[in-house]
Length: 84
Image (tube, rainbow, N blue to C red; front, side, top):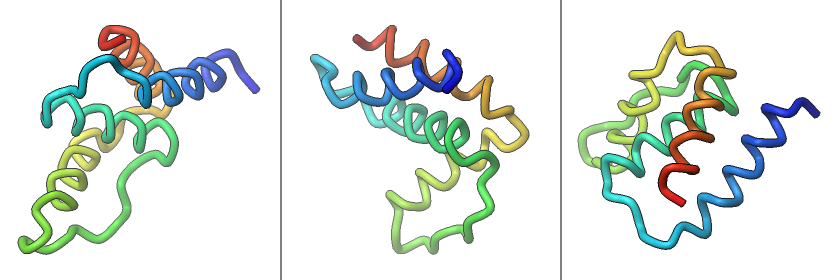
């Protein structure tokens, strides 16, 4: 396992123990960076208008299309560190 993957896994664990719950915009950013870092570009079908939460998450992730997994991991790690 690379150092980046290890740091990403640690940040994922740290994200579950933040002292304060981040605002919704930050939560969407965390989600999108995690998905881009762990899965890559969004290829899932866009949720319908009736599921606003799933649609917001899909949009946040889809906005990162083209970002490398490594860049997403680094940004995720930095964001979680800033919130800790």
